[in-house]
Image (tube, rainbow, N blue to C red; front, side):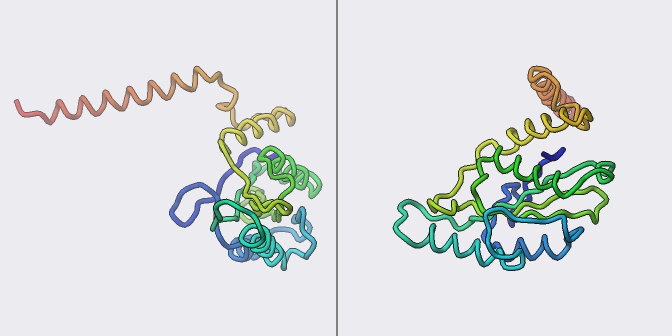
Length: 203
């Protein structure tokens, strides 16, 4: 797994990572891609430049069409990013990236879903874009993604422990300490607002 996990913002600015166009997302991640060999797919038969067609077919045939009951989604695309530290670029390999993507998919309950992964190195911080079809290729059902950030944060923490190189120490602080910090921060903000309002009150 990677050191950080980021759900890309949707059109409204929410970090849901959900979208409606496989071609749109894949066009972006493949256009600015890094090394040619640092990319791949899972659960797809067609080459990467035609993977959007295959994902669209799965969505249309198994989710929108057929005999499947229940509500239909208009956002079958998941777009997320796995990121590493800049210094990790020295030792990262294609096999390690591929295993990291598979680990992330398993942790999200998406191991059986069609996925394209593409590495970017243009920012100096190596990262991998995941484009996942949330529609299951056999059942046509849409995957449920609950508590994604919390689950992936724990997974990233475990990954850093296996490396013996902790980059985000806050993940390992006791839960109570984190809750107390948030409580004190809120209290401090409240006291600041109260002091400001008192200073503005007429005398």
